[in-house]
Length: 266
DNA sequence: AATGGGACCTGCGCGC
DNA sequence: TGCGCGCAGGTCCCAT
Image (cartoon, rainbow, N blue to C red; front, top):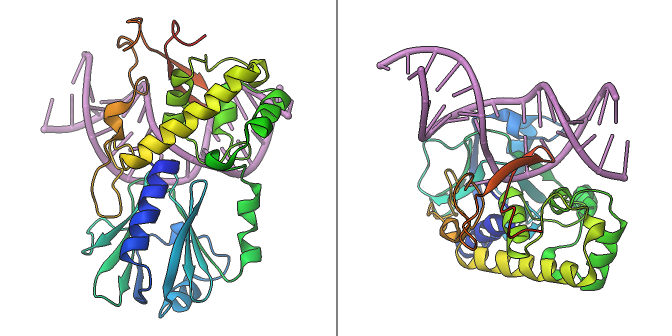
């Protein structure tokens, strides 16, 4: 469920609702989600009594900065965090000192949660490419030129650009009128600039609309996003293109269902 | 270096 | 109603 706009939405909401609060109790129902090398018991013990200082995002990673250490959470496909009452379907939950709960939701239990004690242990963040909003056009073009993969695969590669996932990669390519099968290196300078501009526009709008809810996704208050109503191609196989009326195609690229208009996207 | 397939998981919607 | 299949917002690992 969560790509950059969804993770950003959750981050902002947590900064409003749980910043400064202490964790009183930790309950883990699916231990597999905890990726700490040491024991589950030490994970729980170390978290008890910690205060959440602030929440940050890097790509699709959520980082909860604690008064001692960091809780790094990757929501993968179906993860999410909800603040408020205790959720029946929570896979993990934290009782806070205001008497309310921070619930980790994850229908598919593919998420990853890691408690680390210092910034060096956050080294895995360094493998991520630039954030879309701070990518320079020059560097972007240079990276595209250097690549030998299809543009769609490039957009999904978190080492090339951090935060895009399947929905926004498909939508950005439609907005830029670029066929997802084209080699990244075949984009002209102006196409490449336009694509980055479209990516930023799309992500800004998706953040404004608090993300895309197709099935699972909820923000930290349990509410659905509204960006799904603005999608142009994603999951619209065999339906007419809103621009030209041609039929939207679905093909596999980089192992992912890729939706595009064969007429608009050249 | 890039790609395809499979693995990791659960759950929904659809056709029969 | 029940069952099997396709599909699903992510990423890693392996073989080619």
